[in-house]
Image (cartoon, rainbow, N blue to C red; front, side):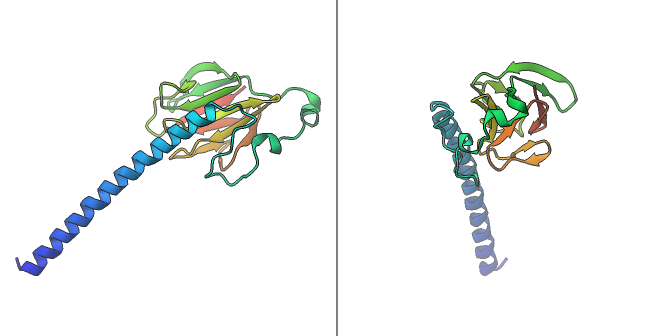
Length: 172
């Protein structure tokens, strides 16, 4: 082979190696940022938690919530329990939602899900003033609420379905 062709192939190989290296570094940084943000948010109370900077909404969930008396005739509509359904249709455990429930792949999550499509800290449910809010924690594959992508914290009610990875969470 000619020298210019070998030089070009070497440069292409070097560029490919650098591109792969930067993609790995970016993936690690995204996971670490999500993990740090969840630990920071979990240490604050739900009323003072800031929304994710990747979200479009600028107001905290409590600022968006209508008064409880305006919902369902003043009856509490907070989610109390979550049922997990796997990709094969098998029902998993029922998990009680306290004031906060983090869903993800990490063992430290309140609801750990062993699914490669689920981020370490994927989403969280926060109960505040008899309302339950769902927010995505910057997950790689996103969170679906009743089949629609979650772009900001949303008020959820019993009967709503949340999809994380290939698992479905039914809120009760």
